Length: 130
Image 1 (cartoon, rainbow, N blue to C red):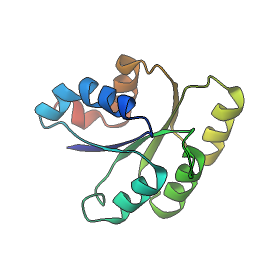
Image 2 (image 1 turned 90 degrees about the vertical axis):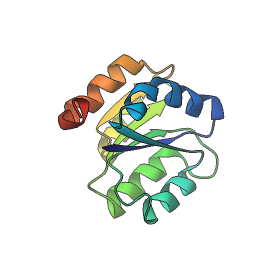
Image 3 (image 1 turned 90 degrees about the horizontal axis):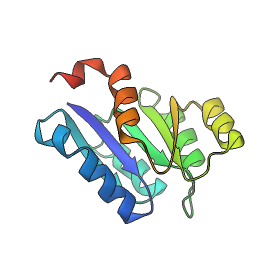
C-alpha cells in the first residue's frame, strides 16, 4: 500500500484529493492522510502512524510554515520520502527552488489528477496493480 500525505491549508483541496484518490483508497492501493499545515505534516511523520509514509503532496503557500520549509525538513529528517510540490502559482522561481530543495515533481493548481497519478505510479509502479 502506498501511503500518501496531502498537505494543504485549504479544506476544499483536501476534499479534492479524497475524491480523486477514492478508487485507489477503496482498492487498498493507497492510504491517504490529509493534514492542513506543515507542522501537522511533520508531527504526523514523527508518529508511528506516519512512519511508513512514501509520498507527500505539499502545497507551497501556507501560513506559519510554507511548503519549502516542509520540504527542507523532510529532506533532512525523512530523506526516503518522495515529495511533490503543489502551488497555485506557475512560477519558474518556485519550480527552481522546489527542484533545488529535492522535490521530485511540481504541479500547479488546479491539479491535473490524471497527470499526478501517472507521475506517482511511475515512481511507485508496484502500487498500481496491487
